[in-house]
Amino acid sequence: MSKQNYDAIIIGAGAAGMMCGAVAGQAARKILILDHARKAGEKIRISGGGRCNFTNQHCGPQNFISQNPHFCKSALAGFTPQDFIDLVEAKGIRWHEKILGQLFCDGPSTQIVQMLLDACAAGGNEMQLNTKVLEIIKEQDGFAVLTSAGAYKAKNVVVACGGPSIPKMGASGFGYQIAAQFGIKVIAPEPALVPLTFAGDLKERMQQLAGISVPARVRCGKTVFDEAILFTHRGLSGPAILQISSYWSAGQSLHINLVPDVDIIAALKEARKNNPKQSPSGFLSTLLPQRLAQSIAQEVSQSRLADMSDSVLQKLAGRIQDWELYPNGSEGYRTAEVTRGGVDTRGLSSKTMESKTVPGLYFIGEVVDVTGHLGGHNFQWAWASGVAAGSALTA
Image 1 (cartoon, helix red, strand yellow):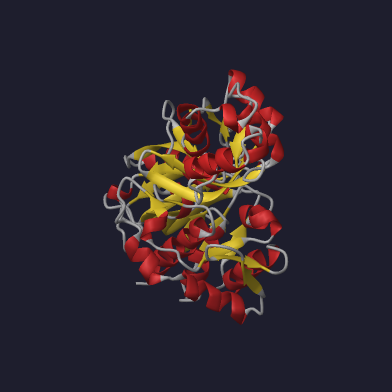
Image 2 (image 1 turned 30 degrees about the vertical axis):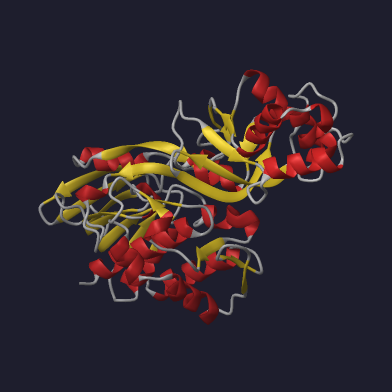
């Protein structure tokens, strides 16, 4: 039935899959990487506006969400951001830091894709693109993998086919189907790092403010992010919103502080005393973009600060520094950068990524219930989990 025997077949030629293949191949393991896409590493190519935010200097377990928050620690300790930087620099790829430890290529993100392809080639990996996996069968001495290009055998199978985020890139929930087939629990997947949407009057107001970006403090429950928010025609986006979306669930409210570094009530009282004829929108325009200031000022009936009582000032201050609003949803997988949830880590070894119940079956990267914050953390998880599994294949 089988064409060839391999030490491992890796399903997915993305960040985690190629990293795993390179590590195992360079330790003399015979590796086949399969992907239904026409090109390898497409999510890498489009990331970071085409510059690839390939890691984050401050990446640690605190930057990840999982129902098993300790799971990521071992892999992240085993392959650090500096380890990936060393690979990048060894290839002569120039990079820079933007904000909050986020590292980007100076040139196009295809440099990172090519670096990984070269590493796979150096390890003698075989890579078959445009190949759909049809079935995986557990056999006594390994696995049979049936594909649109024929059948293959391997001692091990590594599932690195990601989650359903950005379906236009060919993303799907296939990895979850494999887990379910072998009785491995899957935490219900949801879009993460995704813009949030609103309905009714609130949506209309957002549309009027579309294009405005402001630094803000956004809170959902006890989780807080201080980064920019962006008003859109559908609702809210920007780094702070993308970050908080990974913690938000339907029915929950958000609290937004539009001027987190200002004692707004004190500033309002001082302005009322020193410039009583000033309008609320005039005052707010000193702190916020004019269109946003005017929109908020419309919520009070007084046209001069002098006419505003302390209670009205307090209400206005609350609107600016504790704006509570309820999203009606998100933009979904279409624009989600990653997927929250996935293969339950309690069924995997944190050191090797191997299933505890199906020897030889591994899950790495986004398909696993480990979701990073915005800013290079998800790529670092891909590299680290890929190295963990790749190293285990050489043991």
